[in-house]
View 1 (cartoon, rainbow, N blue to C red):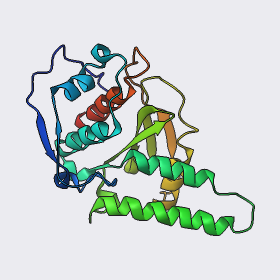
View 2: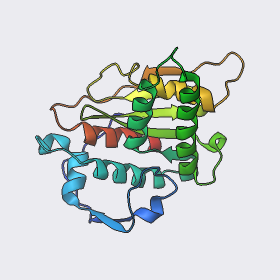
View 3: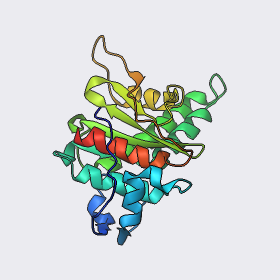
Length: 218
């Protein structure tokens, strides 16, 4: 992955972003209407070191990632899920009590619930046509991204704190195994795709945004 580059200044006009235009790529209820991302927001994404002590809010992160996906060379082959998807997926998986009465039914219900969420976000596209699935992940106020490449049966994560996130993404791996049949001899893998390291305790959201941009735009 090409290391992110952080410009010294950001001299772009405010971005007016119509949420409806991103409906194909967002599974989260971002809302209707229009939001604006100004120079201050963009500067915090591209220059996190200059905004020490300030968080980039969840909404800003997801809007920025939506814009990046729409600007990719082949936007129909890129799927962006919401951070809420992974949070709910993980929590739901951990609430399944294996070996107890009814666990098989709860397991099946868990799979079907999130399968429906993912397919709604496809907006009529086939999962087999998706090259990259970007999954923003928020754990204990820390942002990173997981990148699913269905054709390769791989989940790669990019974490600016360089933490081992394999266990955190186990539920995602189990879920993908159940909704995407494996070819003979294939197996799902989770591995660390690397990231430029953040230099403070607050800029993980900005690094997650830039990592998503690097993955989508190559």
